[in-house]
Length: 190
Image (tube, rainbow, N blue to C red; front, side, top):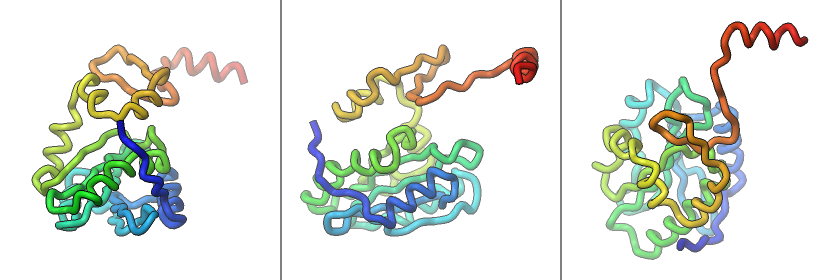
């Protein structure tokens, strides 16, 4: 069980996260804990595709300082699909490690739980690569539930949707294809 740290996002970060949800956003945002607030420390605009831009992540990581990186996964997706990378280097003080572990949920809550579609944890730069993202994002639903905190699992109860494919999603709405005949029938109702 994790315990909340009581740290909340400052006004600048709240505004940046709101812009991100609207699609007016950089590709990467680095968030740090300063005092008793989560703050936007740095952001990087989109320059290429997701794989190209992910190469900038390593340069944003500070050697001895934990941080969170929010990475917009792809321009073709909805702007609310983000990766949360928790960077906690081994050389960081134990107190900081504990503080970042207990504050992660507060950041997800502020940004929107459904906005963060994937999470990574890294303590070494080799763990913060596009290849590692692809390797770890293809985990089973059982594995994903095992790494979630109890509060996250409780929050997801009742939002589970089996899509009939090989993946399971947690969503707030359902999209489905419509035939042209169905579209025409709906159009005739107006």
